[in-house]
Amino acid sequence: MEPVNDPHLYSNRYRVTHLIARGGMAMVYRAQDELLNRAVALKILYPELSADPTFVERFRREAQAAANLSHPNIVPVFDWGEDDGTYFIVMELIEGTSLAEVLRDSSTVTPSRSAQIIAQVAAALGYAHRSGVVHRDVKPGNILITRDGQVKVTDFGIAQAVASEDHLAEAGSVMGTAAYFSPEQAEGAAVDGRSDVYSLGVVLYEMLVGRPPFVGATPLEVSSQHVHSVVPPLSEFSSAVPHDLEAIVMEALAKSPSQRYQTSDEFRADLLRFTEGQPVHATLRDVAFFGADATRAVPITSGADRTQAVPVMTGPRQDVRRRRRGGAVLPIALAIVLIAAAAAVGLLLNNKAKVTTMPDLVGQTIGNATQTLVNDGLLIGKTTLVASNKPSGTVIATTPLSGANVKSGQAVELKVSLGQTTTPVTIPDTTGMSIGDAESTLQKLGLAFKVNSTSTVPPTGATPDTVLSQSPSGGTKGKTGDTVILFVLAPGAKYPVPDVALMTSNQAASTLGQAGLTVAPTVQRQCSNSVPTGNVVKTNPAAGTPVAAGTAIALITSSGVCQVVVPNVIGDTQSAANSALTAQGLVAAFTTADTTLCTPAQNGQVVSQSAPGGSSVPYNTTIDLAVCQGFSNVGSG
Image (cartoon, rainbow, N blue to C red; front, side, top):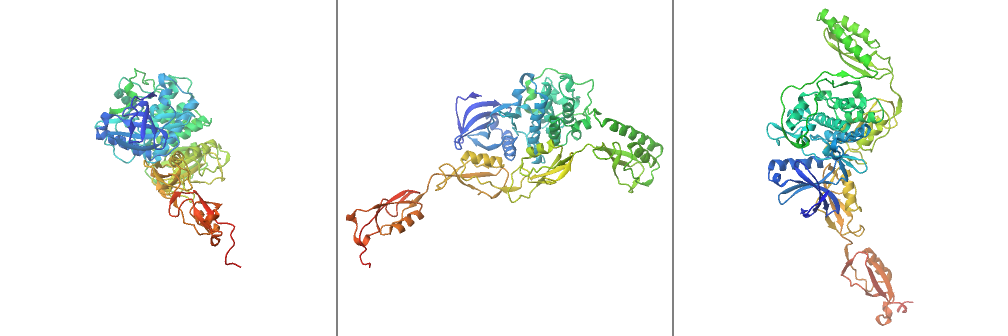
């Protein structure tokens, strides 16, 4: 970071101190929030762009998209605004470095560490996708690593709600960073979370071998390769990449979105399996064919890794047929392919377009089941290999079920046993954990997971990205491979504002941020007799009030003790005077009055007080009271 010459104060609150980085649309500064007395990152749109309503709209949308995302692996947005025609976003200041700096000069990261980092990014993207937001600019420069190793994703500058239209890029071009484009993004087609999966696969590829899969002289050339060229095998550049991790990368880099991991959560789950030494799912499926015509490196230009508008690509994609990699399932899979082909030939020779009854194939070997289908004029359709306690290679289920009416030529789906590959396990209780921690806990036990949204908030409250409940419940007996459904707060659902009373402003801002809420820019002040000066008295909305994620919560802090009115206690007994002052939050200090001020009738009564009745003094002020003592009580007896 370099110090700035002009420490400008934005919106009378944020004073810039150091320049952190220059991006495609804005400059990022370290700044001091003088209201909450904390360091923040200030992203300021370039002056020449602030005059362009299109860029201002994109900048505004970045703030809104990111402010609604609350996840441990996403850089939180605190505020955004405008100062004399300059637009800015206020974000958490991350003390650390970007992945781009780590990879500078073609450096690589170890396979294990690469998988760990990308798994954290996938967790952040999975949360964003479940909230309806696609990042669309996943690249090393937007991945930050804190000093303690936590990964944070930033710069949702091109992110948009999945269902919304994007009219901000010029006609015939698409916004993004060419080196990390997905094929569909390069073509200007609609994108979803699987596009981010592809871009993250490019990042992982670069971490492992020191360069992205496609490089070129211009951004247009690079984006063209994403659409038309075969992905070079990682082994072409490094022999140190484990086969399982290479399979994961190639699964993420499939040209067709339907052949990739369908969610970032699936991608993350396979990465965690790799880090824990478990078999990865990518090796059980097809991976991209490594053709001899793989694209070779050409000189790299700086433009390919910058966010910018790039002309859309046209023409057919070079989707290649994919082969299977090794593993225990290869013999069964190969048998299915060969038998399916034989069944198709048999059908062509014996197709009478007749209606028949679906035979019972459960328990048969795949060979016998195929012969039965051929004899009945049926085809093998989708075949799924699953772990079970049935003998390997036998059919354990069919669709349609046995006994149903089927027509010759109809495809039958089969589930074929891989054999006994499971072990008993007690399902852990993940309620109250973050999604990331819950998924890691389940993965370590060999359990799968599925995240479902719910609008039902339990009595104990809820926060975004936290497990509210699960099915099956914790303590249930299960087996490895079982799926645990995790229920999290649905986007837009309301949940209670946490109680931050008595906290400092920084503590309250952190607590609210962790709960998916933001702090309103204006802090109100109120006297308090119980809260130290500067600490939070209450919030608006009040603690416990249901609000949606991203709501700005106003902090009402203590300005010090309140002023109270001193009661007139002259003539009261010592006991009565003490009660009157205590009721007002004042402290009574009694002394014996000068006898010259007293008469026998005033014995035991207050004859003077240090603060006159009706005056105002701070709460808990001590009031000196003089009481007549030692006179006989006239008239008694």
